[in-house]
Image 1: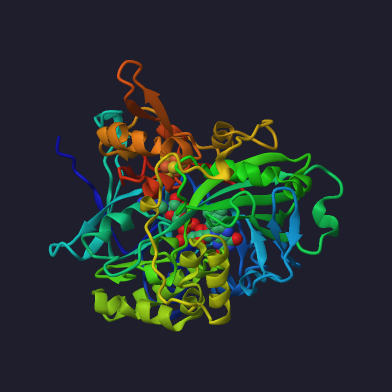
Image 2: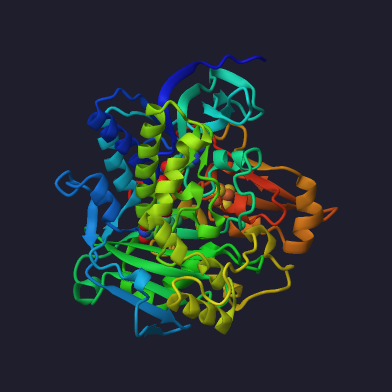
Amino acid sequence: MTVEHESIEFDVLIVGGGPAGLASAIRLMQLAQEKNIELEVALIEKGAEIGTHAISGAILKPQSISELIPDHKEKGCPIEMVVRGDEFYYLTRNKALALPMTPKYMHNTGCYVVSASRLCRWLGNIAEEMGVNIFPGFDGKQVLYGADGRTIVGVRTGDKGLDKDGSPKGNFEPGIDLLAKVTIFAEGARGSLVKSMAEPLGLYAGKQPEVYETGIKEVIQLPEGDTYFSTSRGNDIHVMGYPLGLGTPGGGFIYEMAENKVGIGYLTALCYEDPALDPYDMFIHFKRHPFVAKIIKGGKVVEQGARTVPTGGYYTLPKLAVAGGLMVGACAQLHNTPALKGMHIGIQSGMLAAQAVVDALAEEDVSVNGLQTYVDALEKSWVKAEMWEGRNCAQALAKKGIAKLIHLGAQYITGGRGIVDPMPLEADADTLKPLSAKTDATEEKQGYDGELYVDKLTGVYLSKTIHREDQPSHLIIHDMQVCSEQCYPKFGSPCTVFCPGEVYELELDETTGKAHIKINASNCFHCKTCDVKDPFNNISWTCPEGGEGPGYTMV
Ligand SMILES: Cc1cc2nc3c(=O)[nH]c(=O)nc-3n(C[C@H](O)[C@H](O)[C@H](O)COP(=O)(O)OP(=O)(O)OC[C@H]3O[C@@H](n4cnc5c(N)ncnc54)[C@H](O)[C@@H]3O)c2cc1C
Ligand code: SF4
């Protein structure tokens, strides 16, 4: 069947309504107003509304939001709390040891605790009031190239109304070709369009591999009355140690939120080696630690979500400018790994991209050279300085035991250079050891009470994730034979373990003993862990029909 795709033209198209994409949109409109020029800007977001796919910790360093919207407080920026002090602990199995000093990256006093979902909704409203054409419920499915096959001319959105086999139903609506002079990609970690461009445009040629951590985050409503934070020294708590110890990198956080709530989360680096390790299980172990359990006692989980974070740092940055396109925020690996912060960098990169786009349009040059001013500006900004200092951090964290501490210590006192610069980095898909290599961390599974400690499927329910069942699976297993003949025998099908949504289900044929993986795509958080960690790169995450997925409001 030949399908006609309607096309609509804009000056600038932004893909993704997270902090980076929305900052680009707002800055573009500010510049248009300042220069008195007409600018047609469109922003598409795969979530049903702006904010429904936004998840973060989240401590927001105020510098970039203050530059973007100086009167953000007067304009009602949804700040949950201002950080009044930091607490940093090393957890043993039963104890929390207060560390004598908090690393400088984690000095958050004066920063804002925010909900990424609420922040994005607020930014989205501002962008819309300024004249940005915001299209929630539309996913960018395919990058459109010009006649030279290299210049980006826009993005095709996904078809709507396909049945399970990909045939159009009665309500079928073909995707729309959104054409633009410049497209800004702001898809967040492991963007599917950016991934599709990586090979044809050589985005990562000569770079270290992208690496990620998976974070599970919850908002917990605490009971009425005094809480830990009524008397505590700090209201942002970071921990390292238990349950991962000094092997696999990772750690937890607890942030005080308004209305007696806390944001609590645990990140596990995807360079882990044990195929039986489950990041969700690590999160529950962390919550059950006596120190943490005391803080959240009597509480109830009101929302849950999951997402990957790009932690590779400066040496993993892709080409940030290509002909007709720019990459901003987490889809471009822009993240401060030692500080566990990316929102302020995402916002700043969005603002710098906007400036470069306006300049390139004025010069009528959207070639790589014309857009290079974005890369130059980023290199001269504090974004580069922050990322440069953390350039070997993920590499050092991936070391084990005392070696990890020695490398981190050396980097701390040498501004990131450390003992080896650059330190090598291994792709997350390559780090698994065969099944027998178990760590202590995975031995005991945790019980759930359905209120404060919820199982994975309850977590999916609490994320308000919805996908229409009758559509092609947006999770693609390229070769099921690899699952049954290689992955199951060697690694025990880790996708059935690491996925926080229990999307992958192991089915064993009783007679042949062969493994088959059933995909429950409707549970998917869009965290992208499977796209990163599958040891055979046999799984691809693609966008489902626009408007589906999580329905976050608080995380
Ligand atoms: C558990 C956790 C804790 C964190 N803690 C902190 C913290 O305390 N402080 C901090 O600063 N940072 C923190 N981060 C990192 C921070 O969340 C990210 O750096 C930030 O969200 C990146 O912003 P972004 O706009 O680039 O991407 P995102 O916030 O991921 O937004 C991308 C948006 O694009 C949409 N999208 C993606 N692909 C498409 C497509 N093809 N078509 C249409 N729409 C699309 C997505 O739905 C999403 O809304 C944390 C992250 C996690 C997961
Ligand atoms: S299927 Fe993949 S992207 Fe979806 S929740 Fe599971 S691991 Fe995350």
